[in-house]
Length: 257
Image 1 (tube, rainbow, N blue to C red):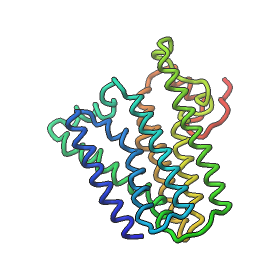
Image 2: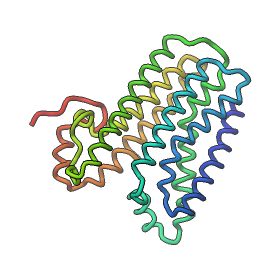
Image 3: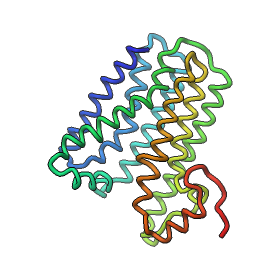
Image 4: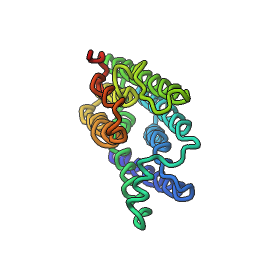
């Protein structure tokens, strides 16, 4: 297990350093967001091939990570096309001034790499486990993952379609899944990682994998997700009205005025 983590750490370090070099050439740190999902794919494939034989659970978890990572990277790439650097990174570029390069490397790419490695723990744990057949927990985990994946995918597509309509410029998305939660994409994202955790529970020490979904959920709720994004809409009356009646994370029926 230790060797799996060390190899994964080296892979993540080299990968994030490469992304950093590309970001300098493009003058756009948004490449970190596009590369986020791909990094997990690299860790999943590495830990899969480090095992001498492919067990069905290993292949299942790796396949789910690949599907999620490709979809997320493609979505962010399509969403960011022609829009320049994300507002968060553009803000930091101005604030960090002459220290931008070193702070970008450490606070954006290396920090994301560390978080990536910690969240990948449940993937590494499963792929380094001894062989055993699938059970009820694997099935429940798969079902929860599929639910989360569909929730995130549909939410992203609904928002993308909404924003492409010029008549919606400056308006707040409050229909479809966005009627029941202000962040269906974040909810779906967290749900998928909890699904992988249920699969990890099927193996020895699987309980320790709780660090993965717990960390990604905290990040989405309090760090780089909801908290940071909603600051952008501070003072927006339409969003404030939407927020008062709509759940911030877990889907629920809108409050009646």
